[in-house]
Length: 453
Image (cartoon, rainbow, N blue to C red; front, side, top):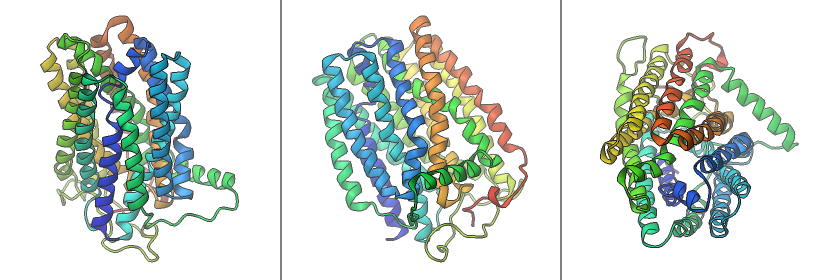
């Protein structure tokens, strides 16, 4: 398999899985409210989804690192099919809150099989096939594919709900996930990664988790970027799902499900714009302490390492300028998007709020590939899926706390004031990220692992 085919397969997997999953994203909050849950209960159910991600992120990341990325992806797809159908059943019977909490946690399990494993599959495959391009650009293409698929899925789901009912998008989602499973089964093969022989699954899990913590929290370059995640992840989850009822309130028609789908489609459009913008942001980076360098961002080596697995044994360390400027761009984007979120809470016009939502989504999407490339630069191949899953775990932990708190704020004060609280929480990530710019005590474990121009 060539590097181009690896990247093409990755983009296909992103498109089909996001297209299927996003069928419900534009109307999920309205779906839960229609099932009889209150505003606070709705976001508490979403918090159980993120709690499921917290519980299962590292174990499923270990599955990807020990057994294979493909197996993890297939398990995730199968789990999402089952939990989507369970969601539909709970809606039909107007089940109690705790049933929603349980199934939401299992839904989180399904997504944790994806997180980390898909990125790790791409990075390992590109390395093994001699990819000469930029990780930033590769992830940015994934962001665009994700946005295009989300645009079609979320708008389609909203329109479908408008002409049928709120349950039909869940039926279509389950069918599309079956197609996603078939595509992954046929086209996804682990390349550049060899599963480790296991004498004891428990001992292997312990060793991999310990190693992932060593390359995660004990690595100053990675630690603070991970620990800033809870603030931004919790806000992004609430901000997206609260936009559905909030925008409908501003629009004046609370049952216009197509408009809710359009709102999610606006965020998808922002993701496309952000993905196209991300490669240009990499021109802000430098290879040396202040001298402008190539605009390509982080590059993988032109030739694979001997044996086809892992990354070069003696990496070329990155100068601090490129890493510091990546962190600086992330900090600036958080401040700007915080101001935009506050604006969403203050305006009273539907169209102005929609425009601000697009700006917010664009900022988030433009910086996501930069953050992904930054983290992958400092994580060894053997622990990549687990450390990336740990990063998602920490972000999800923030969502467990932030979402119900903001949901309660919306219940008491309304959605607008809750968005103002969102802005404050978002800004709290800035000083945490700033600690990543402090010069670390360099050790072999702290050196970047995927850098050669």
